[in-house]
Image 1 (spheres, rainbow, N blue to C red):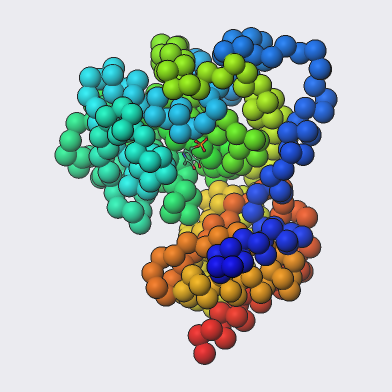
Image 2 (cartoon, rainbow, N blue to C red):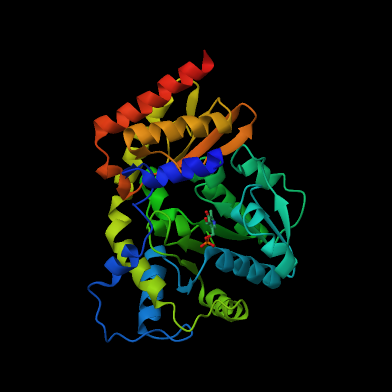
Length: 365
Ligand SMILES: Cc1ncc(COP(=O)(O)O)c(C=O)c1O
């Protein structure tokens, strides 16, 4: 077995896991439908009470005129950008070089929609006002991802978003929010979802990250925009005859977890501090601004995998199921706090992180 597979296997066997809400198994769906009326009608091709009520509820929560439920964020965002490009008759959009669209979607935007991307900032930092001002090319739309997941979930100042928003409005550039993790950033900004979404023309949010549903996304904006998005949803094959298993679980966990985002954020800060006390380990950001952060370590990926596998077996605590390589001598992994954390006895967790510290020191000597 490769070292990466051994780590993933050891992680599966642990009793306690640092990230997420617990195991992603069928129980997640079962729990969410337990109290539902069995006679409630299914949605049919995007119509029906069950989907329309949820769309209206989320539109109100985001302060947008209208919202559409999608099976995935990948589909929703490519469609959003296509609509804005058609409106502006310009097939160019700007976003961060580590945007989900750029690195995780097999070039869907380019291959399916022939939309070019203009990359702002570099891979190590956030998009700042300067980057927008210095943009050399005309674009139909600018996409901001809050928080920027691939750099540890960093966030710009709220003022920066306000400035970018007002600049885009003046310049006629549509502003789209990749809000896959929008719920998770509200405690840091101390803002409502409405206050954030007001700054954007269109918004995508996810129901399986901090919320922990099965899958599903909402795309929100004005009525013209969402009506067009429904046509594209059909073209993309996203208009499943029934989406209700995703909708009911999204709604159920939205209700369960919305109020817990502050708790996840506080835990994230506390756990990051413990990692930062370890030898040759630091978190990005040093102090998390949401429930997520990355743990960077000065050690090769292979060595860390061996070391973590052993820690998991000894402590029954899993930090992560996979590690990403940065260079030959450095690597990192992601932590995203959810309900699972409350089950871990604090002393046990401290001991596991202490073990990481000792192993890192031994590796250096
Ligand atoms: C920032 C961001 N945007 C978009 C997506 C796409 O969401 P989906 O998996 O629903 O296609 C993800 C998924 O991980 C994401 O992290």
